Image 1 (cartoon, rainbow, N blue to C red):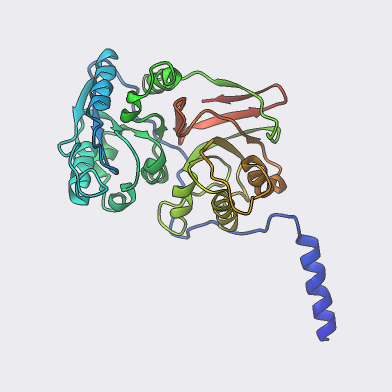
Image 2 (cartoon, one colour):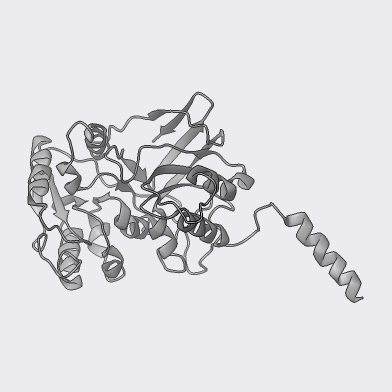
Length: 337
């Protein structure tokens, strides 16, 4: 009898090797929204809060001034957070100060968008204490990327669209390098974002998909596993990007998302910038794209690489929570919002 059971077990293992395991990412207390609410398109005269929910802004006053001037040139009114330039070790003020600025902006009906000044680290320390009852009465756009991923995921899980886009301190970069970032942010805020038609990438997995767009920074997505801001990726298109990690870190995070069931019923994956990836010693032995595809290839859904979104100067706006269409062909990749 023992040999019979051993044989059956070995047969089962051999049949499942190379295939994605059937795992569940479900939180029994969480039901994903069926329809996401889109904050109103901005109008001339609307107010936009510039806040720092995470890292400090030491020496970034000029960048913030440039960000204010940009908003003014669009006919908008910039409103700076009370504690924007505060310092508390690594952070832009204490947790209480950063929380207070963010909560005030969420509650204020006259604020139509919250533009995060920068990422770094710290949003996770205040996210769970935020109250969104005032926000629900007057929804507004959240704008940012990187560490802001936790706030995107929080609002997306509540059923609201958000903008994964450039942050205020990016205005310190060369104007030519951020031209497309600025144009796409403005288009997204004013409701005129066109489809992105991009060159094909040799590492792409071809196909077409439709679904709600969610995601963010790979490190932050992994850090939220097991929390209330973990994403439900069923029938969704997942976006990921990263900066400054070792290849084995990238692999570990991809494996973690796989083990959590993120890819099992996912509609597609969009891979943004994978910047400044560090070399392992000994060498990893394959490209970043190859190690990502080692995880994703068995699922057979479309995968698009080389999308200019993330930490590079060209960081085109993405609307999280928005139903999009992804077409990945041999000739081009098209993302339609």
